[in-house]
Every structure is written in C-alpha cells, then in structure tokens.
Amino acid sequence: MNLLLMGPPGAGKGTQGKRLGAKYSIPLVSTGDILRANVSDGTDLGKKAKSFMNAGELVPDALVLEMISDRLAQEDCAKGFILDGFPRNTAQAESLAGVLEGLSKSIDLALGIDVPDAELVKRLCGRRICTNKACGSGYHLDFDPPKAEGICDDCGSELYQRADDCEETIGARLKVYGEQTAPLIEYYTERKLFKAIDGTGPLDGITAIIVDAVDGR
Image (tube, rainbow, N blue to C red; front, side, top):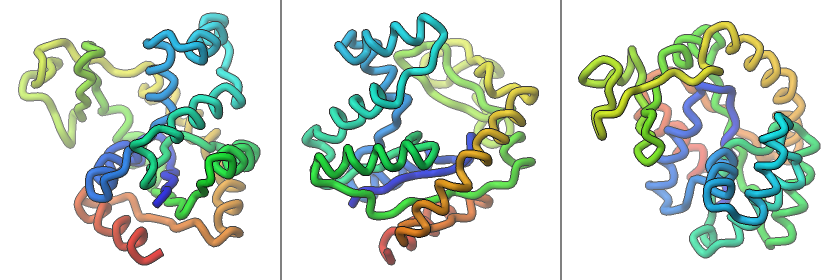
C-alpha cells in the first residue's frame, strides 16, 4: 500500500503520517527528512544537494527524485510507504510516477488534508521545535505546550520558532501552495486516486476518517 499525503503547511501531514505508519507498519517517507539525512550523512547525493543549498539555491527536482528513489528501494518500503512533501506540482507528479514505475511501484491513494487558512495560521504560529537536533521534539503553544515555557520536556533544551512559521511569511506560503496544488488535486482526481480529508477537529477523529478512506479505497 503506497500512500501520498497532500496538504498545506500546518495541515497535520506529519502527525497523521506517523499514525498511519504505525497502524499499517509502513514507513513515513518525508522528503525533508531524506534531504537532511543525506546531507548529514555526507552521501554523494547529500554533497550535491549541499552545494546548491550553500549557494542559496533550491535543490533540483532530479536530485530530490534520486533521493526518493534510493529511499523507496530500501527493504522497509517493500510492503508500502507514506510519502510526504513531494510532489508539489504536476510536473513533479509525472516525474515521481516515472521513478515509481522503475521500482515497480505506484501511488495507490493520494490523501488531501484540507484545513481553512485561518486555522493553519493559528497552528503554524504556535509551533515550537527543540533546538537539540538529536531530540527534535515538537510542541504547540495552544494544543500541546511544554511543561515549562520555552523548554523541551524530553531533553531540557530551549525551544525555537521556525523562521517560516512567523505570521508574515505564512500567507505567502499558503498562496504558493494553493496555486501549485489545485492542478495537482486535479491530476490525481483524474486518475481516481484522490480523496479529500477534513483536517479540522480532534486528531483521533481525523485519523479515523483517513483510515476509513484507506481501507475503503
């Protein structure tokens, strides 16, 4: 079972992806995590990516796809995977389909988590992340606050707010997502692979809706 999670920043893709991964015993494959791991481990692909990052440039799609292909070819993806963070437009979707075909795989279901913009702004502005990269625990000032203000419960390190989680940048991020995603939703709808998910309400309720969609596909 190969799933694709779609949704704007703050929609809860990471949280729901982890829950689905645990339920179906398949890995959550985040392109952001793949990129960071390759750079951190100093792989050939990571070194190439770092050269673009150091120059202030976006990592090319072709390089990201190489990393995805390498990750999805690993043994823990044999029974399926949950892909988060790619594709973000129809050109990337076409390229991804080609990569998956080369691995004798394909997307079984694309889940689009839908959350109103006002709710997304509230969610994103309240996010805090542990500064200790080895820990990386996440919190939310309203929904999941740390026991001590500004301090990680797990390791005692300070928490920080990501630069792109500031309100002045969120509107631009959501605008870009909306412009790129509408055609992507159409792309997967035409292939009878898309399912819209209401991403508001309790986490358990959203998970239940997603599980029903997956089991009923």
